[in-house]
Image (tube, rainbow, N blue to C red; front, side, top):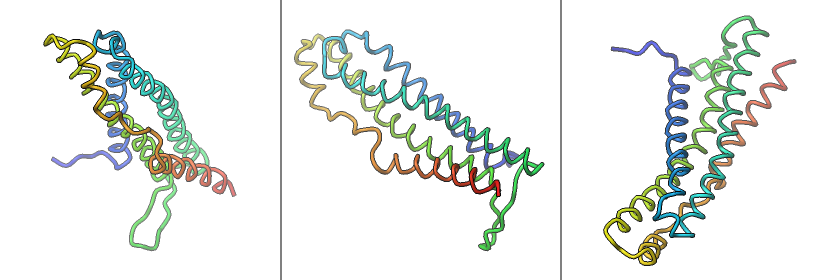
Length: 181
């Protein structure tokens, strides 16, 4: 059965699913600070706190993305009086401006959220392994030594993911400023 959802609706659904995954992992990391295996491993606790700090910043990115999406759609509706302003690209297809802006904002957010999620899963695996080892009776210092050998996740804002965010925000800014003319 074919879906009646628009491309934008599908992207918004994808965004909502990724945000839900982000929120579940964030909640797990919050709770894990009190796990015995974490409390006994200062390095792992530091990784968790660092990830949570970045997660707090991403919450702001999520809120800004929703605001940009809604703002773009409202602006087009009020100024043009319809759901979109179609532009012929000359390449055999038509681009709807608000859809392009919304999808761009979603894409930038997904890049950053996705990177955080990948890093959070590495930390979650370390926490799970530490708990298993501790429950098997392995001494806490030995558990910490084993877990600390696993490389920590890479920094969240590497140039590529930050570039996606900048392009998405820049595209929205240019559209907002030049479309009023």
